[in-house]
Amino acid sequence: MRLMLIPGYNIVMETKHIDRKILVDADACPVKSVIIAIAKRYGIRVILFVDTSHILHDDYAEVVVIGKGRDAVDFALVNQTQQGDIVVTQDYGLAAMACSKGARAIHPNGFIYTKEALDRLLFERHLNAKVRRAGGRHSGPRKRSQTDNTRFEKAFIKLCSSD
Image 1: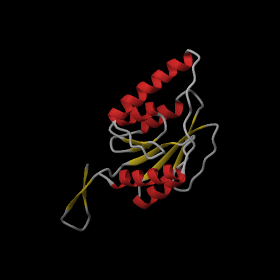
Image 2 (image 1 turned 90 degrees about the vertical axis):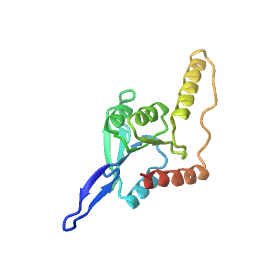
Image 3 (image 1 turned 30 degrees about the vertical axis):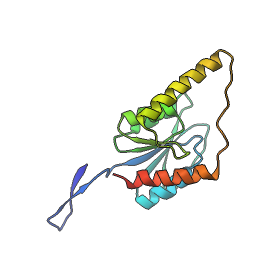
Image 4 (image 1 turned 135 degrees about the horizontal axis):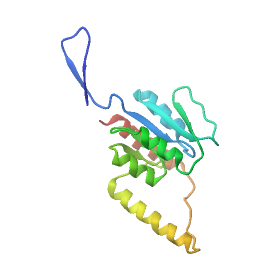
């Protein structure tokens, strides 16, 4: 929270999240255009993080290109994350790191990460890795639907409009 003196007036206005930004793990993010459209509506800065294998340009969002190292984009993004920011990612580990810094994190399907959900998701990811190392398989993610897009848009607007 920051206090702001409005020039020419004898009032002080309390502002929250004045420096809030949206950070996007943009390499495989299917909702970049939705994020940017909503961010414009709310006047929130957007930073898209991609690795060098992706070419991305946007007139509104800042694009940060990171080397191809393992988790390099994730670490660059979390290093720029501050309390009150919004992080869009499919990566549970990145979401957990962002939430630990006081940011809100949302999956491109519209699921807003919570501490309890992240604990469960990270445990499931650990179990799935053990199954894969033992030669087992499990099903991948289902195909994206219009319902996912609608759910994301509603949840993202809720995050952008909340304090």
